[in-house]
Structure formats: C-alpha cells, structure tokens
Length: 418
Image (tube, rainbow, N blue to C red; front, top):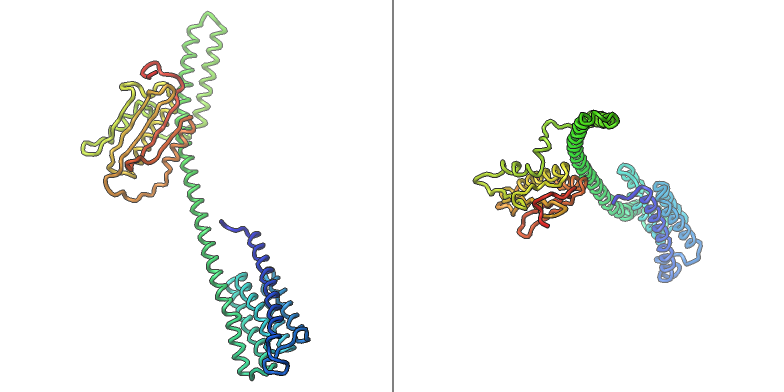
C-alpha cells in the first residue's frame, strides 16, 4: 500500500526527532562515562573532567548538534551545516580526544541528509560533509598536538570516510530499496487499474448486448400490442368509446415503439441472430456444428424428454441461457481442448429451469491462454439482470461445470413433474 505524502512527512519528522534525542542521550552518556575511567589530569590520555569548562563546551556542542539533527527533516542541509560548524568551533575552542563524541550527531546528520535529498544534492552534500568532518578532525588533531599538519589531514580523511562514507552507503541501500518498493507498488496499482478497466469493459459489453436483446423483446411485445389493438378496434364498431380506446392503445404502442427504436437504434448489431435463434429451443442447433464425428463430442440431455425447455421462461432469460451455453462451450474449448462436454437442460423444476454445461479434464497439455475470466463476469452480469443464479467451479475429476438457473415467469402447462 502506497504511503501518502503527509504520512511520509510525519514519519520523517518523528524519525528525525527520535534520532536527535538518541544523539543527545548517547553523547551525554559518553561524556559522563569517559572522564572517570580516563587518565589522571596531566597525563597524555587525560580528558576534561565532568563539569569543567571544556566538558561543558563539548556538551553544549553536542546539544546544538542533536537539536540540528532533530530539525533535519524540515531543513536537512541547514541542519548538516550547523552540525559541522559546531564541530569545527569545538575543535578550535576545546580540542582533545573527547571532541570525537561529536561524531555521533555527524553520522546521524549524514544519514538523514542522504535519505531526504535527491541524487544530485546527495552527492554535493556528501562532498561538503566529508570536507567539514575532515577539517574539524584536522583542526582538533593539530590544536591538541596529536599530529602534525599532514598527519592531521590523514586522520581527518579517515574520520570523514567513516563518519560520512558508512552512513551514506547505508542510506543509499535504504533509498534504493524504497525506490524498488515504490516502483513495485506503482506497477501493482497500474495492473490493478488495467484489470478493473478490463472488467468494466466486459461488464459494459454484456450490458450493451442485453440492451440490444431487450430492445428486440420490447419491440416484439409492443408490435403485438399494436396488432391486438387494431384487431380490437375492428371488433367494436358499435361502441365508439371502446373503438376510441383501442385506437388510443394502438397509437400509443406505435409511438412508444418508434421512440424505442430511435433511442436504442444505435445498439443494433447487424451480426446478431434473431431472438428465435437465441432461445433455449435453439440450443440443439447451437451444439450441432460442434459435434465432430472424430472428436470427443458434446452430449445433450433434455429433461423431461421431448419437453420445451423454455416453457414459462421469459424471452430475455432464454437469451441469457443461450449465451451462457455458448460462452461455457467456448471456455471449454479454450481451457480444455479435446475434452468431452455435456449440456443438460433440466425443466423438471416447478419454478426454475436449470442449464448445466460440464467438461472433462483435457486429455493432453493445455496451452497457456491470455483469458482473464471475463466470460464468467459476463455470465454473472447477465444472470443478475434477469433474476437468475449462476454457479461454476471445478469438478472432482479435474473438469469444470457451469450451472445457470433461470426463473419461470409462469408455470408451463405440461411437461413438468409435480
């Protein structure tokens, strides 16, 4: 999940504050622990005593540096400059071995600067930090008498490599991992968006097809109403009021039919078969071209035997059932080529007609396909729009089965078991 900019800013600010507090606590711990175990005053290994002026100067410098580290989330370059300036001033005011405690905030400042700046500024910052740490260490070495000018520069360069180079390398690893994770999240978001767009396109295509079917069915029924009204008008010549009502019904039906054709005429697909060719009764004709003498074959079972499977089922629901069988057989040919298929039209239910398409396991290796399951999405969309239910899933033998239950609008007059 991608982190929002505001959340990332709060996390960076809290991290910098925690780093500043840790630098102050660690620096104070070192300042309190080292003097008691160091050599006596006047010895080569002597360090400032706790509470002395030099000791207080070092503590003040560490406190300033720690505060700068805590503010580095908002002003990383300014904070790094304050850390280096405090180290250089301390080396000039109170030189000695205990000045090395300033390396703790310097390391933190280098790391935070590297992870909060871009590539170009990061390189410039690394060079500036290296130069500043080298200068502060060299000044401290010369002022404390630890080494001569050349030796002090060598010590400063070594200190700079450790104090700046190591945290910079760690920061580069962290920045690289963040960039990879961000790129991966963007890729996942793009793939998710593409998948959602494909799903939305598939749903829109199915709804468009259903709208075309609905147009055909509505036009068919309105045409029938208009014809019945015309016939009624001729049968009530002796009743002017009834004749006028029949005339109005016919006129309104024709007007609605004309408006419907104008409104959804753009949905017409010239390649679509008539409604009669996309009903449950037409499913045997759908299977006929797919039955090859040398192939595995497609079995068809109609229950009850010889009955009209679409009795009592609306025309739109029959179109949905027809397309389900068509889509399920297409999926079987794609994902289980050569497998035997069976289609069952079960009209024994009193209020529903069940259509089942089942295929066995593919007899050989199945080639990879780029299908995204949009056929199943279309089945669900069509089934929901006509009040049907669809169920699909693998079979125990490794095949696949799709079952669609279409509701009846009226009970058939025959062929259904009580």
